[in-house]
Image 1 (tube, helix red, strand yellow):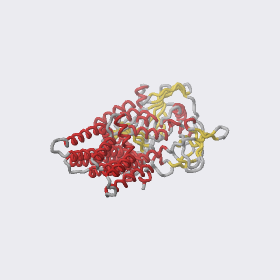
Image 2: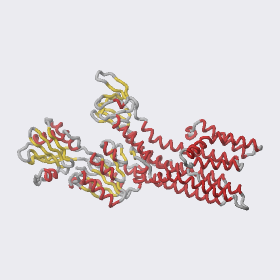
Image 3: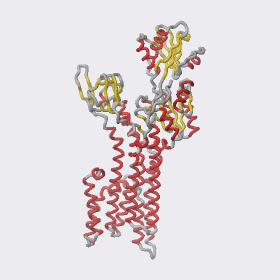
Image 4: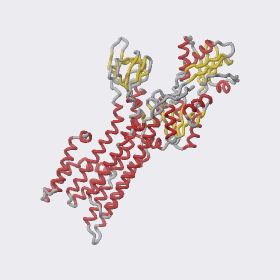
Length: 634
């Protein structure tokens, strides 16, 4: 019923007319030759005119012999042999096969395209006088206020102004459970407001909004083909002329002395019908598209089927630590003052510097300063030394803050032995050239981290962590999460070199990250995977796969789906080629008639398409459940 409902009324009438006429001709109701010829020609033109037009366009405009051309030549030959039912059958069943493929493709496409509908064309813009205006999302600027009614989709990312909001995030994350946002939290676009009317202060413009980025990923996915898919597309261009040439040679055999011309022409027509590449050309891309649809249902966007192939062959995966394996939400866990500087003076100077950065460490210092009620002083001449730390002027004093390597390599100071019972990220503060203190910050491991690494090991994929943090912190995280190996104290340029080494050792390797400094490594990886919810725009742009809700357990789920999808595509290729080769051989030897050829073409096409639709039902059987690690991370 679903396929019939998706067919146009005209197509139903054309197919119905063709089937009825075939029955009349086969049962001998129409016995007069001229009446049968006239009826066949009229119905044939009515049924097949779109196919004839497409065959002509491909041949004359694109100078290519398409599958439509194969069907046209085959039916003309059947008409020449006065096999009227067979001529109609070729076109009728070809159109039925195409209708079935369109339905299957539409089902796969709807799994992805339905997400695009969540981008509203209008947004309720609030003016300072309290008035409301409906405008296009592209006209709203950062900092302006918008209103979202109950049941409406959020058009632009914004900071929540009310106390709380309950939203449906299933389009972005694949999770059906409502999410609760509190005042000040950023609500992503594309979610649906499930509660009362909410107001937001826009934090991202239309082109950088979450739903726009998601739509761009969908569009990119259509442009990137896998190797088998691209091979099939190229194959169809050269395949048809070769088939036509072979059919012509078979027909010419009938011109030899003592040969039955009609018999050899029939063999040639059988060859043309069964060799139609529809099943191959359509079922393989449809297999990959079904896989993309299944992955999108889990909240993972894959930018093209070429990445499905790479995911299916993955041998190793490397991850950034902060914001990827851990929450990326640091908190001050220990402060040690050195010299004459008090704890308040130390943290006030640090607060002034870190207030100018959006790094998770800087956010933790700012949160501490606000909680303790420290005065926010102005920092001037601030410089960021990438991978090391910050330096600037506060109250006329030169203040520098960074990791141990910053203090020793850049400032030339010697660090004393400072024991600590806290394992975490250590920052050292230098004021006017003297070491003033050490601040330790702790992070926590995501609940999805441990099941992610266990699932990767079950898949036989090696795991690596690459972090700029010190060795003790990295070792602690690696032990808790069962990570195969880790590389600590890595500068941004070191990360790329280290990843290349891992890739050389293992073969097909993926990288998972979320920060701007991860973008080069994401671009270098065979599969770059970005955390899309809080990840930087540069990381998402450079990545091949985007996890929309930052849940690591979605990655092994995606890998399993990719493996199944790739094997399914290869399965369809082998099935179609093997069956067609058998019928081609039987046709050339004279053991197959045109009805078997039709069955071999249309029946095989329907079977392959049904097989290609299977990925849409795989999602539930591949889920990995998050669970908290047994130990707390530092």
